[in-house]
Image (cartoon, rainbow, N blue to C red; front, top):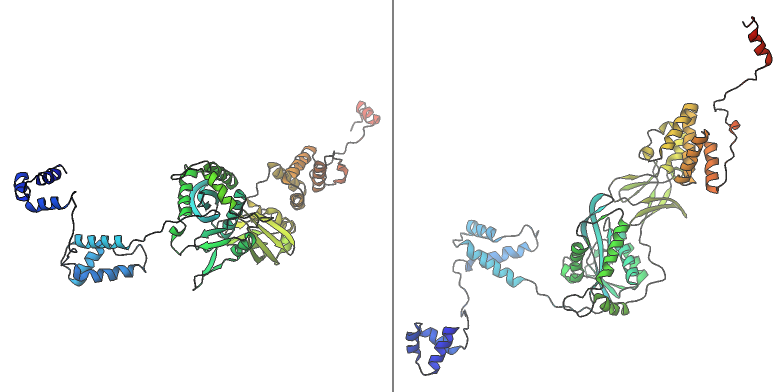
Length: 495
């Protein structure tokens, strides 16, 4: 720039361009350019680049790349592969560099452009993300639901063992309760838990559970283009933000509920932040969002998947590839199943007959040992091989009770032990445990005694046991010694 200024100044003071070129040791064309432009204009191309060796093949390259758009994204032509095919199949004699430059320029011009969007208050976006967590000492994948309000950037995050339809709906129910309002609309991708089918005219056929949820809360659902995550870029960014800020280091919690309490607290604390380009906190802008949102309905939606089934000969009901037990009295009967995010509830007619923790494994069996006790009482030889009882962790006093019963009554003792276990159909395990310990202390080893003791424990009254009613208890008969017996010891007729 200093030379540029000196040349222009010399010519302005009367020096000719020919003399300036000789004086400053530059060409006359350079001096002419300096006089034509007040600052260096930079390089200016007057004609398009000519590629004499490549121009004849650009149509072939464009055809290959267009065909790639309909194929797998990981099996598309690279510049190296294009060069090799041109050389081997079409006799191309040029170099690899001009092929690479052409493909780079073509890709740059073909990139999508985006319109900056404004986000009015009261609207939301929702999505699911994934992260590694440790729950109950087991490392596993967490699927976390994220709802974002783009106007204020307020968020709600909740984690689940799987991104099922029930988790989608349950996440919304908790998010609406968190904000205390229902958004005017929520933008989604085309997840199959929400959209059963995209019709030819572009409308969505909603999944059954999600359709009922929309009818309950009465907000408008909107959907992005298939495969275009940028249509809901705010929540996509929030998924990454939540993973980096809420889940680093890897979260460790005993239960999912404790983890979700922590996530909810972090969402609340974030409302005090002021984001880049904003002068207000998230919480201050959230007030405008809430003012544009509608009130919650009188009661929340029940986030559960509903299905029907039939009890098998082993008193099992299959739901989502897993088998759940029911009382044996309902064998071979038709039942209904409700799958929540944390439990499975089974009923028959208007009666609820079983409740189990939700299992997210595949082809597993979930037992309640109490369901099988009436059958085992009749088929007592199956007691030691019954799978539902195999992993039943009972207090050690129960094993002691069984050993004493079997020692005194053998097979009848095993059956009576099962009758003691069947008291769990009515009483809690803690109450029955206390009664068994008391029975062992009193030496009243029998079903009737344990039943009496557990009733007394629950009703908080002293027990009244008459051991004479137990003929199988060992007895000791002590005779009365007469005075004549002692006199015989003094005589010699002892024999």
